[in-house]
Amino acid sequence: MPNAACLDVYSALWSAGQGHDIADYGSFAMNVMRMEKGFKGAGELTNEVTLAEADVLRFARSDKVYLGRDKTLNSDLPWVCAYLEIAPDGDVDGHGGEAVLLGGRVVGSTASVPYGHTVGKILAFAYVTPEAAVPDTELTVIIHGSARTARVLGQAAYDPESALPRVDAKLKDTQ
Image (tube, rainbow, N blue to C red; front, side, top):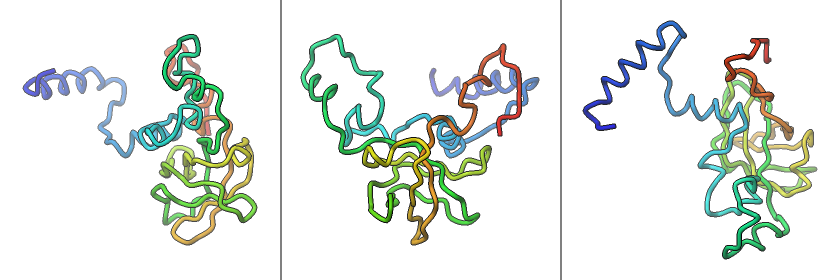
């Protein structure tokens, strides 16, 4: 839309949302919401990792011939993007780039690390060795020099069935 229309569009959306508890929110809130749902973003999807390492091969065409196809679809993975919950300390959440350890040995580092207010946990995407990415694996994440207990999640921390966005969903306590 043209910049001149932004205020009119915002006003129309705001009016339409009054009966639905509409609220303003910013990019940090949106980042936390995507992390609570387990959605990868710019911090995880970079040109520094392959589609397989980022765990997004579902977006790669396997039925089409293209440069790098065989390597993309059939490579050994030195890293895997794992989804973690990290014990909060009530003070420091992390920023990305924190060391991830398995049994006292560094096995990777975090990419995105926010506190999920809805779930009451620090969440992270981390590139780790494949053996460290297995759901329910206990890990350690070093945040500002402090060792924190972490666990690999096998599903989204919030609404793993994706029931809440549906108009026919029955609301339930998701915590």
